[in-house]
Length: 192
Image (cartoon, rainbow, N blue to C red):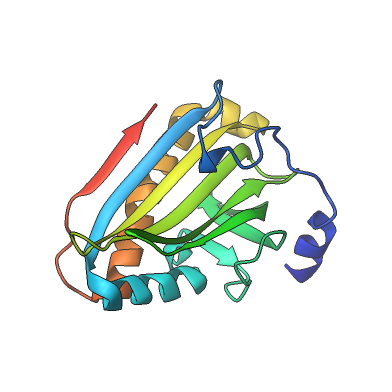
């Protein structure tokens, strides 16, 4: 895995709209959003921030991030591995930007974009938000993507189902990382 990540580190992004998850996702891509309330208050925000830094949102059994000690720093490369069709698929991504903002809405997160060799083209943002007025802490994923491999084109419906599953499972993993075995709240998902 180390050689795989090192080999991909010098490559450019596989899509043009780098950084678009910070603003408006581009036309021509599938857009997915998942949002879940994790709890309330600063302790929840800090626990969620730590979980994101440890890549807990990828510890799903069928999706993993390598290496889970990759620092959240723009330019760092990580391999997202997904289990599909009886194989582990390695998908290289580079961190595009990191968010660390204080204010009425305190935010922490990052976005990564796909590199050549990824089965998709696009970008995904993972964000923790703490609304200091309501005390609510939420986990939010925003992604835009389109197929970048013959098998993802042929299995497009399965890929779209897997993307939705990833959003739900990732939100559940973050909730468990912050709250333990408490019952899961509603997970809001949308496509556009």
